[in-house]
Length: 251
Image (cartoon, rainbow, N blue to C red; front, side):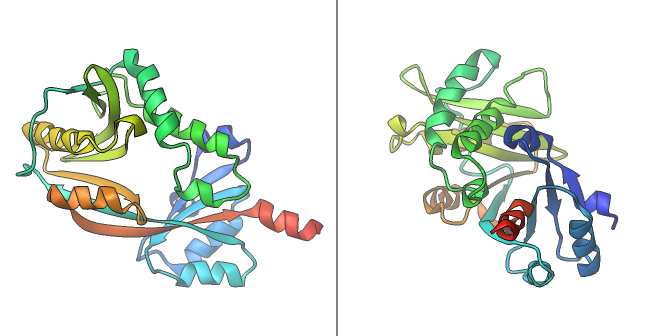
């Protein structure tokens, strides 16, 4: 496996934070030496690296060789085969368009204001820029001309109450980001939206739906379990931030 395949640029993160950011996805079968060499050889200010949960060998080796790692989160993936028995069409859910970008912004800017994902674990990443990233991410899939992605809105008496963004790849669909505005929580909107997506993508002939969240987010995981989704995978996220070493050397 080459360094280019282990590490990839993250242009949106780089632009947002004003530093060079790369991402690394290290699989269970990735050779330890190759992963360590690729990370050491990178000149990125920040590497966001994901490892299978509990795989400590490479992170420990990196720390022993002088890299500073922040354990930023544990991400869990759930999935279900389609068609799913829990799927149900909802009259208050529809596909979003570019005309809905402001409504999506309102939901995301409130729902993710204090969300504890991996960015929040890094003390060198400003909170306001992290929130800007969630808003950008939430709005990124509202173009109906793109057949590989969708954004959906659930409504409460005509007001946009929540959204879900989805990517379609091959025979599967992944819900990549979703939220309900706090003003509309505990009204069943999240479950309504999820069941609608299970129904819609079943009707599209897809074979699997998947979704992920941080391990501490128990409420949505209980909702997923009630809808028939099962825990499939888990990953530990580490931030390898060279600026922390630079700060230490200046003290």
